[in-house]
Structure formats: structure tokens, C-alpha cells
Image (cartoon, rainbow, N blue to C red; front, top):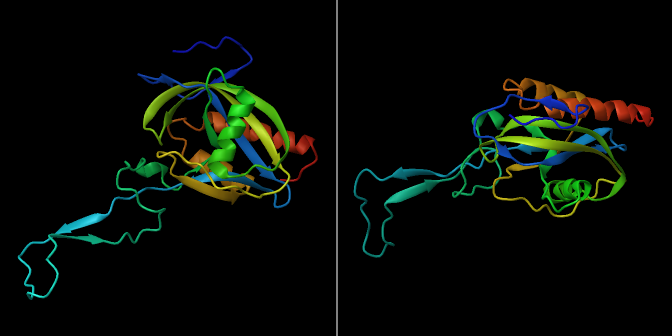
Length: 219
């Protein structure tokens, strides 16, 4: 089990076997114009259903050669299919998640978190940025399907505008930008927290709301 070197940093989550250490952080992104928060909504990449032919097909000589399988169209309301990807856990489908990621040892923590926010959300026009909390957290990364322990830093990011650039998502990052209220975000985090994986995000969100109140924002 990892030890907290700074006693002021709280520890969250449930320690698991074979934890992978990956320090980094997350950004809580607030738009004062709409009083909403920018988050990622997770979806599944669903492989096409393949129906094998059960009997020979009768084809006229001038017809094209018969196919031995038929690919049925994906009728689910999901993002475009990529057949090489493994789907994320069913329980995480539709989950709301903060924009976050690992930061390399030689990368400044704030710059690393901002890079992750820009790449994952497309948002870039920031008016104010500040560190609002740190935590040692144990969690299961549902996108990569690995157990992790991390020293996590959280930034409060207040937008100047909600303009976006194209996103730069990695293969495992199956989510897209949505806008939600604080109540919606906290409700989703709590509803999906049976394994205590969201404890640190809930802690950071509560600190963000307190700080926004100190700054005079109504959320």
C-alpha cells in the first residue's frame, strides 16, 4: 500500500492487488456563462454483429459472387464503431467523468493536466486556473481496465469562452464532451461509486464548488 508522505493529503478509494502507479490529475471545468461544467460522457465502442449464412445462396450467373456473411448495421446510439477496440465495462457506459490523465515525471503538473483537458475536451480558452486539491487515490481505470494508485492534483478551470478545437483522443478514451450541472455531476458520481473509485473526484468537486462560491459564482 502506498504511503502518504504529506499528512495533509487525504487518501481515497480501496487498495487493490497489482496496482499500477500513475500520478497525474484532473480539471474541473466551469463555464460562467451557462453555469455548467464540462465533462466527458463515456460510451461503448460496439463491434458489428456478424450473422453467418446457414444455407447456400442461389445466385444467377450475372449476379456478383455471394457473400458468406452479412454485417448488420449498428443501431445503438453510440459513437462510431471501431472493431479493434475492447468495450469498456458495461457499468461505466454513460458515466460522467472529469477530464484527466497521467503526467510524466519530467512534465509540469499543471501543464500536463491542462494538456489533457485540451486534448480530451477541445476546450482551450481559459480565464482562470488554480490548484484546488491533491489526493492519494486508489481506483480502477475502466477505460484501460487496470487498477491504479496515483497522487492526483485537481485544477479548477474557469472558462473565458466555450470555444473548442478538435479533440485528440487516444484509442481507449471512449467519451465525448457534454455539459452538466453540479447536481447532475455529483449525482452520477455517487450513483457509480459502489467501489469507491469516485471518492477523490467527489472530494475535488466539493472543493471546486466551495471555491467558486468564494469567487462569487452562483452554480
